[in-house]
Length: 246
Image (cartoon, rainbow, N blue to C red; front, side, top):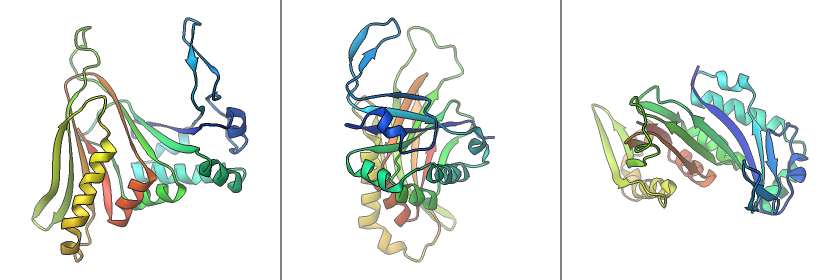
């Protein structure tokens, strides 16, 4: 079984957490409402929440799929079955709400740690659901006080078109990771480059294209990035799958 966990996270800038829970037939694992006080573990108030937040755990049976496509497809089916009122959901989304699948990978157990095919990206895009991939990664070395939570060294984003006997990279960009890095911008740049310069030349090639994200880290780090439904749709239309490698 794959080592991952998934939560369905629902946010809205105006509606209360209670209003959000009325849309879905799922018991919330955690929630807070906009303008409620933030309280630290010590009991000290530290500002207010700027949006309402409801987190739903995913039933364990969904996580038993033998690949990520099956898991996300089963999650989409589960999510659709738990919507009480589709019209209320549409109103929720149109008024600024959003729903995200937050995928947590707690261990790096393979060079290729996460991948989704174009048809699953398209399915998520049709539901208007972004995907947030969150990784808690650690080297085999003991992490000392001096090295704890060092940032990743760099990330490489590339678009790869498989051609018989020769894999070709059409776009590759390596950049250092900082707190201001917005990975979706880099993915969008790669796809845009591919669309402008390559796609017309490769219409006869029906194999899947990969948007490949390679993470190169120093030590122990928690890292997350989000793929919006727009990016998912763009990938699906170009038959591009997303692969995250270590």
